[in-house]
Length: 522
Image (tube, rainbow, N blue to C red):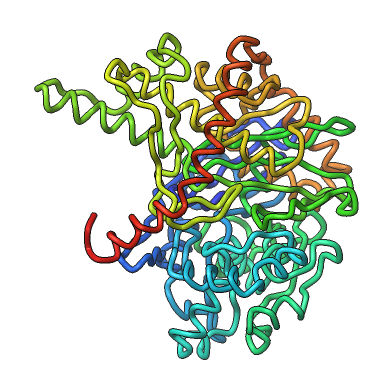
């Protein structure tokens, strides 16, 4: 029997998935998943049980093996990607040294503000290409060193989510170029940078950083113990994928050989990405923000801006509408309400209000950093309806995307879109008009797992390179183009100026509100 299947694991913030793809064309053959659980605390902590995360990952792989006939004999390789940032500490015996810190954890926010005042954040940005924020392992390790040094003392390796799973699959302590470099490296050299560690005061913690492994080049065999737990064969090649943003970018169409395209992944968070042929061709904007991330395509590099909250804002307005229906005595499930809200946006009035989509309690990180930033409507009048408010939320997401692309340079000639919002006709039309660029949807459902699996395919020689993998798996999934509406585009040009002016004026007010919250006021 031929080995005709590639398996991708995507350990996201909400769900852990294992997906089997047909090696020839990327068609999804089967999928198994489990919800990902984490705990949030009032002090800003957001932590995840590392042992449970591995147990759930092994379980979804075992379930996938049960669902697909002869999967152990058909699997050509396995790859893993997952949620980025955060800190997952492992001791010398290979056990968790503490719960995993997620990217949502905001305990290090004050440390980052201190580095901003001292000029350290700017100096780090010029090396790493990353606008240091509380999500990053670097800031989180500084917090641990200052507040829980005993935790660091018992740790032997500092990993990210996917690195931990790779360790459990193979026994290899490693991280990938994408997360290693934007956290502790120099994006020009592609290596760890001791000056970065020194600026952070983490010279002694250099011992925690694992070797860097490129999963599009190198694989390691599935261990006997992991084979026993997953039902897959010992020795199966396992590839360490790049961070989920990069893998989703590959699966979503961010790479088009010889063409300049952008990709917006509009899910719970918003991610806006474009590729550059060489690091030397990329000029960092002066204000530290976003990420500069290595990609598994020789010579290329990406610039990324991320909104803390994207469709979380839509979830909020849908929740408000659902609560209103319940208060009126009408039961309405969220899925039905979302569909009706989405339909209503198409006929609602454009520009009824300006909405800043900073609904996440951790504030905003792209294209500016402010842990105190909060969502707001500006310009409300008594004739604004619920559909108008919903449309303003959609427009706010589109204008936030434009804000991010502005920090990445001029938007590319075509924007490709993935994530939950890609299924909304209304949002695609609004986004195209706000950016002044055609928008094209990528329909590869599990783009993150697919991107990781393509990396594994390149590593084992199933594809000659990423060009061949993308041509076979991604290009056939790109759908028709939504063009900008000229009239809307003109309105959104004017609205964007107002959007930017308002958000630039708000930081002092956001900080005062944060002071009230610190005193116990909601």
